[in-house]
Amino acid sequence: MMKFATWNVNSIRQRQDHVLDYLAREQPDVLALQEIKCQTEVFPVDAFRAAGYDSIVVGQKSYNGVAILTRHPHEVTHTALPGWETDPPQARYVEIRSCGLVFGNLYLPNGNSGGSAGYDSKLAFMEALALHARGMLQAGQDFVLLGDYNVCPTDEDCAPGALSPDDALVRPQSRAAFRRLLWLGLTDALRAVHPVGRFYTFWDYQAASWQRDSGLRIDHALLSPRVAQRLLTALPARDERGKPQPSDHVPLAVTLADALG
Image (cartoon, rainbow, N blue to C red; front, side, top):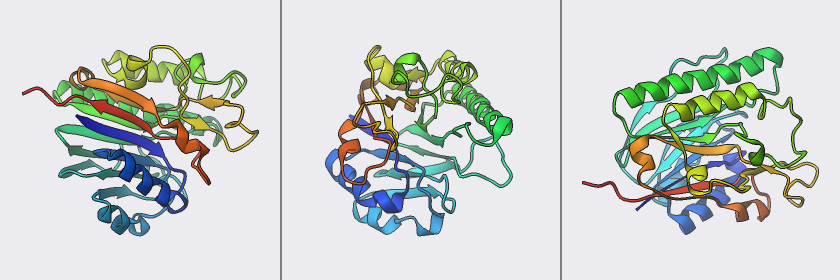
């Protein structure tokens, strides 16, 4: 069996102990982190190495930043999303090949800041991601695209009243761009296992969102077809949100059966 997870930690320096505890308890083969909010050279590589994990980091001072932790041999395939560029650059994508799969770790732009240009950048990222996924499918690669998508795919993925209808996370254009990824043949791991129900991965720090369970499902793992055939479980680690000084996101963990042959 293989286990991987994605977690927007909202500052690795503030959440390092949370991540180390999660690794010790859950022993994922691969953990994708978003919003590490630090430069590459100050990421706590040694602490994770002591826990048995190599770190592949694309950092940025104070903002954004992504990293992948893996217990297995790996090859770095991309340190930015092909076809998506900004000035100045933003650390929002890193990709490795490990355990026979490609893992693309993404932190998709929120889209609510920066006016129309900010939202256009969000949609451009999603289009570039779709093109990259299509290319990998055509090449016969098995892959997982996981991370903070900043999209609630359906109304069931957003607590009633949590967001306005014009919020970038729920706009029709955002949801259509997410559906285009599924129409390529990718599988939303959580919904494949739990077709209905509210399985939030994010609760804002404001307005007692956690206490009122006013959450969002915005962290996703999309699986290519052969990977989806191996899917066993997918579930947010909801208890993480109730711990002291938590991230506003919780891990989404996915398990796969071993590959045949």
